[in-house]
Image (cartoon, rainbow, N blue to C red):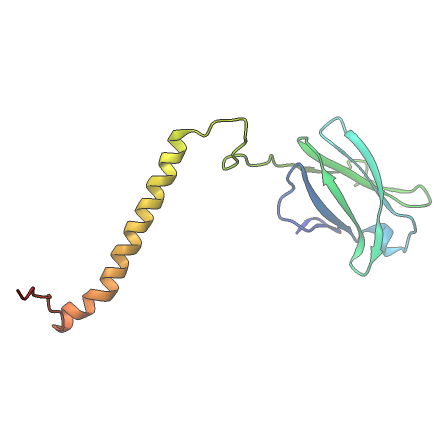
Length: 155
């Protein structure tokens, strides 16, 4: 996924508490800089600031980063000559999505019976629809052609 020119992620969404691989093909890759690192933090206050040295590959400089909690993922790049690629002083800032907890069942929390009933109703309706489609596919051609005969009990 390309979010900004020369910056790629290995995922469609940046979700907090997950890992992401970032690839950088910007200015430092193009001029063969050495010791390129990504300087990053989370949220508008740049919490949990960290630096990771990036590995040079054919696809650009790459690093795997653990995304922590926050509203945004902020980063910039630095090379061995202490030069910065910080998006013209604005840094690279991307929103982080929260982890979806709708279908997670935690040991401490009781399961809501309302949600269990909804899931059961949905499951039962899907079974009924599949059974109806099976019967239509199986018996409708026989009825139309006249080859359908009811079994008669012989006593």
